[in-house]
Image (cartoon, rainbow, N blue to C red; front, side, top):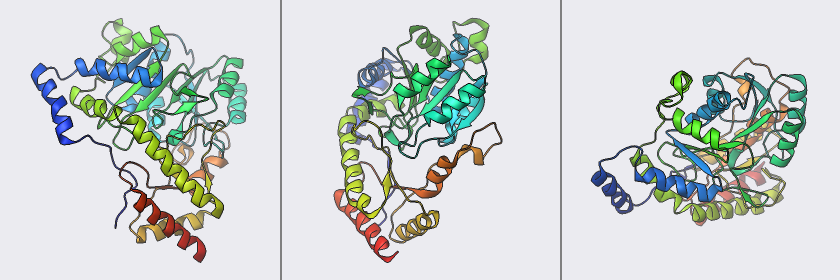
Length: 365
């Protein structure tokens, strides 16, 4: 048996062919009917007035950061980001002309630590904060917004892994000035590759639409900052069909999350949590231990049983030399956490085998 960590959710070939036939008949491969259909579906899911679709999630964040400068929302070139995030967050910061200031996360939600953020804003000239919502769990936006407002900083979010999540009963995507999402292969729904930016800010949305299409219509600033980040109708066909299943996919992952938690928490394993008891979207389910060596031993044991796992995320401060504050929690999470198979491809029977394997390992150690 080999149980994969994740697999992309794909429609059936017949479902896909039906939508592809519409594209072939239209002879329009970008900026076609599907773009508007998917945009409207995402607006309903997220609850945002405006959604801009892009070719990747990384492009979405990069274009958002460029738009913040062009619209005058952000004056400086310093961006505060968490150490515990995928490297794409950092890619977008650099490519949009910002310099990162790196801070820690909490061991409860694995999102930005408010105390670390407050200190960084007090001691630096940064006026931009990029929150990250890892694995489907939102940051504490009420508190982050309060801190940002106190220091006249703009808050945006890399919500790449969290489409469909809720924060205090409200769909994630309108808490910050703008949120970006990713539709890469391992996300809850995929476009093959793709991304989106959600906002309620009309001027920001207008600028984003122009920048994704070479910057045309924004003068020389648009040309200098624009790019081709249009997503093809073929990619949108995959996403369009996936969005129809989003609620079912979230419900399935939540059940998997609770099954892992109910069985493993009594053994001493800890789980990512959030302030409000909203159902977890669970892009992936990760367990946390204090002993890094035991994590390594467990991972090797599960590999021997044909069960794929992964450790997330290599802290950014281990990769680059940039201004940063102490980030012990980010290192604890990387060394002490282990992501377990999660998603539509995982049957109850397969999850039961994983739980049995972990229980056997636990008894022996």
